Amino acid sequence: MIHKIAVIPGDGIGREVTPSGVKALELAAELHGGLRFEFEEFPWNSEYYVQTGRMMPDNAIQTLKNFDAIFLGAIGNPAIVPDHVSLWGLLIEIRREMKQYINLRPVKQMRGVRSPLANPNNFDIVVVRENSEGEYSPIGGKMTAGEDEISIQNAVFSKKGTQRAMRFAFELARQREKRFLTSATKSNGIVHSMPFWDGIFTELGQEYQDIRQTSTHIDALSAFFVTKPHTLDVVVASNLFGDILTDLGAAIMGSIGIAPSANINPERKYPSMFEPVHGSAPDIAGQGIANPIGQMWSAKMLLDFFGYQEIGTLLLDSIEDTIDRGIVTPDLGGQADTTEVTNEILNRFRQKGAR
Ligand code: NAD
Ligand code: IPM
Ligand code: MN
Image (cartoon, rainbow, N blue to C red):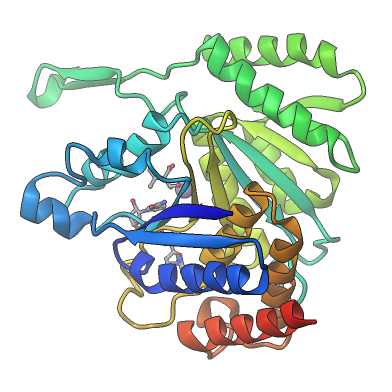
């Protein structure tokens, strides 16, 4: 089977780690007889914006619809384009236009990684982040100027949008051992959208009596990510809460450099998009020391999505073996560079796949 993949390396370290992910996918295809990928790369990033006034051409969404998946590095170069312009012009635009309303983000203790937690106890969480609405909304505006200036930003929570994210999370919990779903809320302080969110969670929960379910305020839940993450299983969260929680999740995993994500259109009507959780990391861009694991693990999520779980598992095993051997970039306390880590993972992947 041939899968057409649009590759958008983007800005900063996105350009340094995307090739590692593409190589992992190429090798997966080589190791798995029936699988083939066709890649096409697109140069859309902040420099493209400086040259053209757009992050992507007018027909970009139409073009991307011809692909089976999108493989993204990272977007953002605030030195030349303000973040809200670059991100709303590409990343958020794609997530919305392709109806990728689920952002799946595993938060899991990896073999060999030293977690900053004293007792990580093998935590294994999946955050289901609502990815199309919530606090990320273009609704709002400004009025007056000077001392009396006012800025208003409206959050948007639809019943449909909330239900579909929660349903996805319940179904995911059903496939896992713990069968436990936590809803991230803040209905003690946010008086409209969060009680609405809670109400939908309770109502939908009736259909999932076999799933243990609880609502936890986001502030307390953040603390639980640090104090007892091993007690959690699936977490469903609004767009912003899910965003913040997964950088925290990445931190307890050991580094933001290893966390993967999948922006999913569950109906598969439009391409889904796979990208690391991290950004373009301007502070280390160009040094060749970016951790490629978040991008390579995102490649594994792409393999899973298309039904190649077996080969995906070999890739993740190879990543863990490499970490376990201490061949890691500086963010994980090592001295290896992007190329060394990538090559080590690929060599191990090749050996496992040949067996
Ligand atoms: P960031 O994730 O880029 O960096 C945060 C910190 O983590 C930095 O110290 C960075 O060096 C480190 N880091 C990140 N990825 C790493 C890796 N693979 N290996 C080693 N260290 C790594 O977040 P930020 O600094 O808040 O944002 C930088 C830019 O990226 C901004 O323009 C922001 O808007 C954008 N951003 C884009 C995405 C995306 O495209 N999906 C995600 C987050 C941030
Ligand atoms: C992420 C990023 C984006 C988000 C930013 C860059 C808009 O932080 O993918 O986690 O908040 O969704
Ligand atoms: Mn984020």
